[in-house]
Length: 356
Ligand SMILES: *[C@@H]1O[C@H](CO)[C@@H](O)[C@H](O)[C@H]1NC(C)=O
Ligand SMILES: *[C@@H]1O[C@H](CO)[C@@H](O)[C@H](O)[C@H]1NC(C)=O
Image (cartoon, rainbow, N blue to C red; front, side):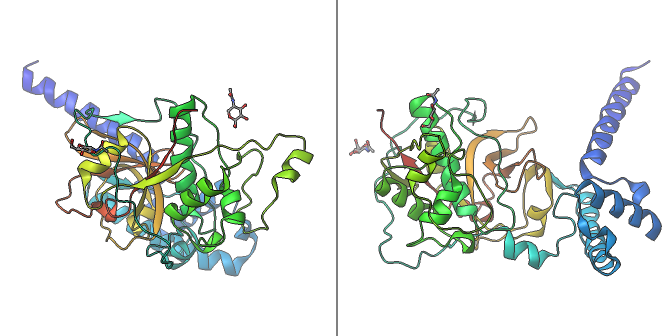
């Protein structure tokens, strides 16, 4: 066998393996797409996997089937274009884009209150010798991906993930913290399921002396009244708080500054999250399309470069572990745009915490 035949075989084998593992990732195969009947079968098995109650209600079912087919068309067409990212049938597959936009975001991008002044100091400004890559998951500073559900509370998830990170880095203790406490209690400037801003949340937490744990004050996916700490004590668990000293903003529109901060801790960032490709993102280095109108809070937890040289920021989302790469997304760096892909360099900030 000569070398070129051998190379051809190796290439064919690896690309087949790649294609079939991808096809599984997509949640459909080409055989599912051939007729209305196969599409309906695909829809039924998808809906059964996701416990959709409407399978017994013919009217809702047929409306949802139409939405499903429209989403599937978009997914199939995008995957054919072979971008560096690919899309899949995920838990949002029966959700019309407007419904998704209304329920799964929740950032108030332009703080309405004059009390908010962006910080002018940046503690990492003189950092040099950045590592080539960093992944805070491997350093034990990232809790499992959570799911905000149909509540516009992304801002609270972003805040909490950045706090969980700095708390682990400073104390060595990785503890899942309460998103619900922010939704119920941080209500002066933030608005629960109707949206909020990470900086307000950091300021609130610093002012009240800390945040309780997820275990003490679990997520309910809706706005409730602020539970006094005493209640948690009566329930038998000690209402321990995890504190921060304050927060700082990353200088805007600067990828380098974001990397400097990320080299030291997870960072809250804001993006334009309503894009359809984001709704169905399944894997790879995401490259848009998206604009820079910020509407979603997430948390950057690392950065790196793929083997084929694509530079990315690693981001933790709050849309469950089935979305994206086990709940994470790699977003392309350096898109030749100072605002960053989806505006991710426009509104980054992080909590500060000193050693006890
Ligand atoms: C960075 O270096 C400059 C010049 O030496 C200094 O004035 C500044 O305080 C330093 N910034 C920080 C955050 O240490
Ligand atoms: C970690 O922090 C939480 C919250 O403060 C506390 O309940 C827990 O006991 C701590 N774990 C360790 C091992 O220190």
